[in-house]
Length: 244
Image (cartoon, rainbow, N blue to C red; front, top):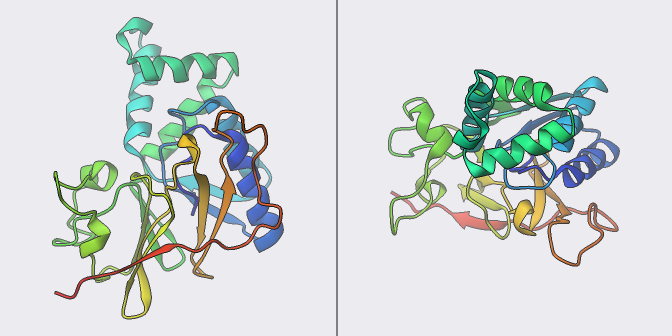
């Protein structure tokens, strides 16, 4: 699984190369929010499509911003004036037009928004998380895409005991990937490490219980980025779930 890409196409290409070359990965699930905020939505669509065209399996669960951007593209296709679309989506659209990737982006987002959750090994991937008090099956799809803690509250993984197995999410940027542990096994993982804000793009290999990151290029003055000199697993920040 790879955390929120946010149109960081160079970092995504580098991560896909690392996963294939170093770990022999053939299937990737993205945590959503593919095309917003970052510099290259057209390149991001191109990187995903190229990976698929090379014979690998790649898919994304629906993020809140994927849903919004898809709706904006549909409105534009139906004749809505550009100035009636949000400023952020106007920026995404302009970059897609320049890259001649509007139709490809529409197809990719149409596939993405159809998938609220996905299985990856023994893990379930959702964009935002679940409500631990009612469980995965009873959490509304809207919450799986949009969930945020209440004001002053803690993130969902702090209260999740693992009843529905391992759940992997993005959505909430963290400085280091979160690995929530219950009875010595991971039960929740967050892999959104803020690539678009200058952090890193992080992948979690569920079979190995391993994190790998590539450095963000979205930092002023940083002209290089991508893979570490010797890509190695990075240490997550562990959370031990409260008993209760």
